[in-house]
Length: 187
Image 1 (cartoon, rainbow, N blue to C red):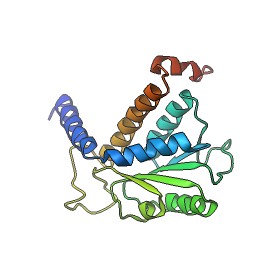
Image 2: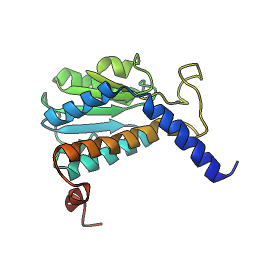
Image 3: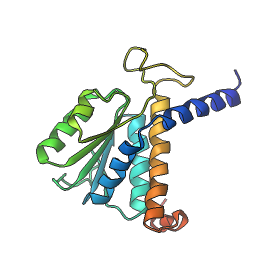
Image 4: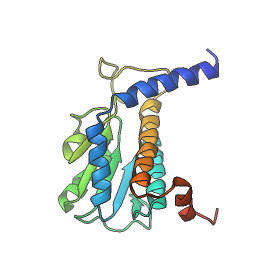
């Protein structure tokens, strides 16, 4: 199969996964972002990279955003929001982070394939992304697509996050090209 055909097939699978996400769950995330004093993001591996993209875009729109584990990340407080991404919802480091955030009293929203996972149960809100994860056995609920590993989940997180930024920017009447005024300039 040619690369272009793989990419096209993957895009169609991604579109189907995104179409299946419950809009009410996305709306809950948008409301939580707008209500939070500060926003923290965390994930593992490529899921973390996708949430770092969300953090950067939220910063462009003027939100105070931090990546858990970075040396400049301050203490999490009760009026803060923690956004987590884990396809399996069973990533032990994220479960530990969610437990700590829950003890502190902040709000937690998780993006996961499995809404009954440990991480989802610790969260006040869940966005179920119906995509494959290689961390759990293949099943009716966890069917492999054309891309390797957890790529479909990770790419869905990225595209969903960027789409959420468009919604937030329109609501705040911030043209997305103007938001780049806050983009890093020491690169």
